[in-house]
Length: 414
Ligand SMILES: [Zn+2]
Image 1 (cartoon, protein in one colour):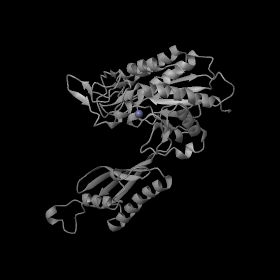
Image 2 (cartoon, protein in one colour):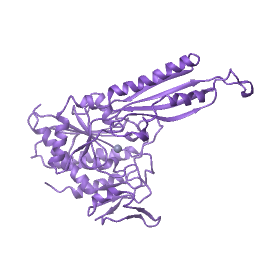
Image 3 (tube, rainbow, N blue to C red):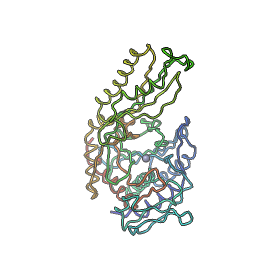
């Protein structure tokens, strides 16, 4: 197979150098205009590679392209990655540093500022002794999440476009904004996307994949009290803060993020604010299991009802917003998606590892909208951190996995 090392590395460094950090709490789409800087570059590059139907949606900052089928009737396949970077650390200017051959020790990221990436702090470095790593200068994110995926998808696209003798089915590509701030690929136009199934590429650890995510809701509990002068309060005052405390005590004490893992769900108190007169509690509810998820939301209602009996009617008001659902039920209807993914990963010499994802992905929302969309890891490490890095070998391997995946779809009759 062709060696994709130079092309995927050059692309990644070029994309990482563009600050595309999204912003939370912004209602515009995209949340930051600078995401267009990468979107335009990708549009132009898809065109120059020879991808068809390339289009940048200037209203929503979504980039589309298709590599048309050159084979007999076979199933299409779609690939989706996000252009924005996380908000947890400075987004730029990014100065990618190349460690040509990692010697297994600590890495000096920034000589002037004395910033080291210590092996003791980041044991995952141990997997990459002898490999070429792309790191930050210790002051910003790298943006391997998710530009490592974009570099792999673009390199795969170039491979098929420059080798028309290689047969493949339709390959649909889309790059989306604002994944890191809950965009959920909401502006991805499924009418324009030329495949009826897709994979997102996002996540650490090469060879990992996910098709089971949380079911998610957020609840606002609003508690009304009665404020009077504390000196004459006996038998009259109702302190909503005390009732909020009782409400939280009524939730299962061990079912919190800090005490759970694997497929265990939880209630997580995100915030509480108030005074004697009114207190608002924000709780998020998560569970992989659809039935248990329903029971968790029902428990909130049950506690609310009990409190409205114990205290004056209308003391507690509950409003639940459903955020996303696990994609598992949707993916179970298209088992070939996981069979093909596992085979593509293992055919490339990597062990496929499936984990129930303790969160949601853009694919959770896309699956609910009718585009079944499991996730394949991009192979970056230490995401959302100044210590983010991308082993070049992982991107090369993902190019090979994507090519193999396209071959497996080509070999499937419609
Ligand atoms: Zn990501």
